[in-house]
Image (cartoon, rainbow, N blue to C red; front, side, top):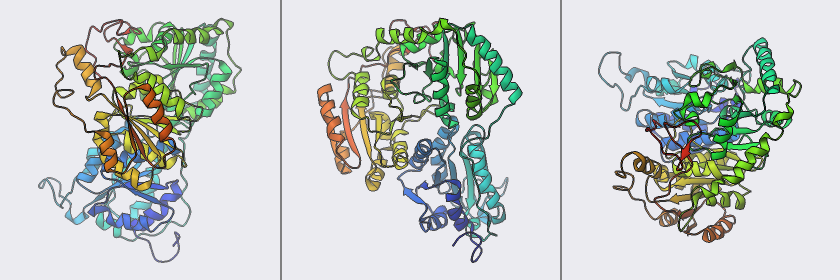
Length: 584
């Protein structure tokens, strides 16, 4: 049945029939009593692929991975009570990293819901997920009647992709799911990218000021964040950078803004950034920040030293991020999808004085190679291993990481091809993100394989989703860097707690991951040397469906370079010792 024909649809059938109109092809869920009506309708729509996972957090992260890879929203669905609360970490992840996933939760019947001020709970598993999720959504709404649902659904997708993208939650009671509504005949349209914001006059003034500053600059630098990709503006960004010939450092979330072989790619800055990248920031005499919120992971504790006395220009779709953590910037609140084409239409700014500046950065890169920062006396060098993986697996569509030391080694050393993506959890930084996010990315990749780089600790957080990967035949090549501990916090304890490794090494353990893989029917390889790694990488390329490489690494390896907190910006461990404890 199409909308507008036959009997009036229920809210459930209206939802199922409408989702493809918003570009939704995939729904990720774990079944529960309060969503059975919705699921029954969704399974009857051949235009929807409903992917059942084994934990609601996995559903949320899978929807995030799909959305980031496909560039269109996915839906995550969960039942009331524990199902809805299990989604919250993934909701927060989408909020902090600006990902427009639409979350839908089932709720108990309206007549069973708790009356205000009377008791803690009415219906079984009743939980006020709307109020719980408000701080980490752009909009969170309880649907009280069938009549309000069509407009609420349309608004949910509009809000999710408008301005700074982010998650929206709709909570639908069981009775409302079954209620019939007047159908909407016309096809509902959605926007896949935010509407341009900001004043053209302000933009003209900003560009005029920027151009004048660039023409007096000898060491200009662009800092590209996740907002470039979020605005769907990577193509325009690369065109602008190639025209201007200005080198680029990226945040963790902007890691795939430029391919690795670009002579203008100056690496990743920040707390665990490349040594030459932070050096370039410290040496620059002009900084243009595009779609990055300049948090402490980028600036370190020496915010004044990061800011220095150079002119800093900041463009972001979210005006609340301008002059927030870093003050004294020339700010422009505008969507990069409109700003970058406008900047491209201007004459190319230039100063002959900066012609050698990109070469100087690359010379520093050669002098301070990332693969020499973590050379163990024996066994595998994780940065070199990431470089080997990048070289051997040029066919993967994306590198996905979990959260921990491996995340930073991957970000420091991955060599991305022109179209390869880098997906990680930035603001929330949730362990357990990687495996379900890689499942979503694999479903959005058109059949191209996905590489997941995980640590032994984070991988165990959502280990159950290996069964989901097997069931759907996801082309995921898993790399588990196993140091037998929670390495990031262990490094923290080494620096600040005199090596008391409570809960990181002491009281922690991990299974034999090859045996775990075998239990799920997944081919697996154990490697302890770089030669063994190369052999396993080649073998994994011929496997259809998921595979796993268990990489044994030394438990004392630290992530270096690391910003030395309390020291001037650009000072990095292990050559410089921190003088204060970092707060993040």
